[in-house]
Image (cartoon, rainbow, N blue to C red; front, side, top):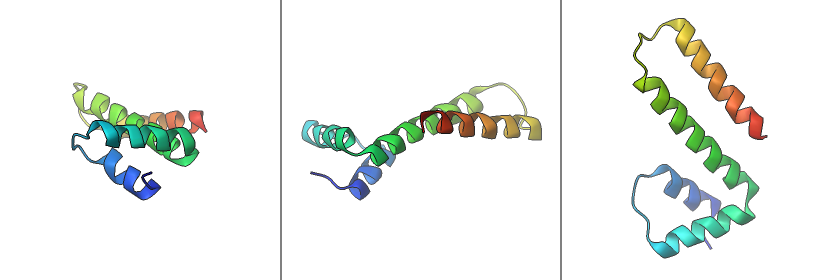
Length: 79
C-alpha cells in the first residue's frame, strides 16, 4: 500500500503510471478521505487554471479576484 506522501508525489507529477501503481492509488483513495479531497482539489485547480489561461482577455485585477473567488468557492463546496 502506498502512503499519503507517495500519493501526493504521484498525483502532482506528470509521469505515466503502470497498472499496479494506478490500482494502488485507487485503493488508497477509496480508504483515505484526506487524499481523496486533495485529488479533487488538485483537479479543480488545474481545470480552473486551464480555463483562465485559455480565455481571451487581459489580466486585470477584477478578473484575478473573480478567479480567486471561483477557486475558493469550488474548493469549499465539497467540504
